[in-house]
Image (tube, rainbow, N blue to C red; front, side):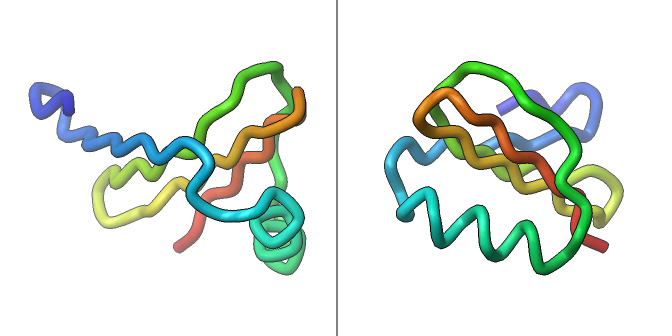
Length: 65
C-alpha cells in the first residue's frame, strides 16, 4: 500500500470470475483500458473507487463514483 499519495491499492488475483467482473464493469459503461496483466485491484482515490480486473490478457478498468 502506498499512503504517501493517498492511494491505497489492494491486489486480489483470481478473486472473482472474469466474466462476472466484466459484466459488472460493462453495466457501468465506463470500461477504460486494455492491457496484458493478470490481477484485480481496487484503488481508493479521494473517495473515488477504481476497480480493475485483469485476466486472460484482457485488462478492464472502470472508475466508480
